[in-house]
Image (cartoon, rainbow, N blue to C red):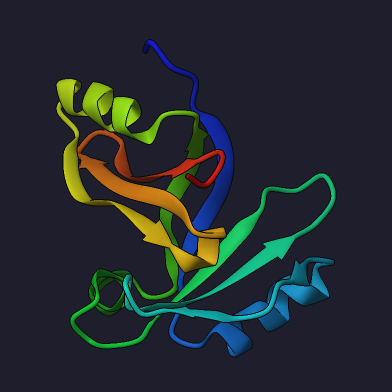
Length: 136
């Protein structure tokens, strides 16, 4: 690839952020405030712990949301891996050349400090999220 993908977080689909975060808080993670993202139709909470990967809990706000469909088939489970990129448009173009399907975006995400995000899928890789390193 012609650009770096820097790990940002693992997204976890859940039915109830507050119930799911109990386990992670007991494991030493610190939760962020819960944020509703009406554009993505999800409720979001980040969990951080020194020396551990950042986690993002995703609770669907409606049943048509892709997270809700994942919960129906897989239950509470890892949903995506997110990477930071400098130029999201260039990264999306490069991944599309590698046969990734653009699922959504780039769009501004309030849960990501108004940085743009994009979701892409490839059957051998799964769902990934890209997030710009800095907001425009």
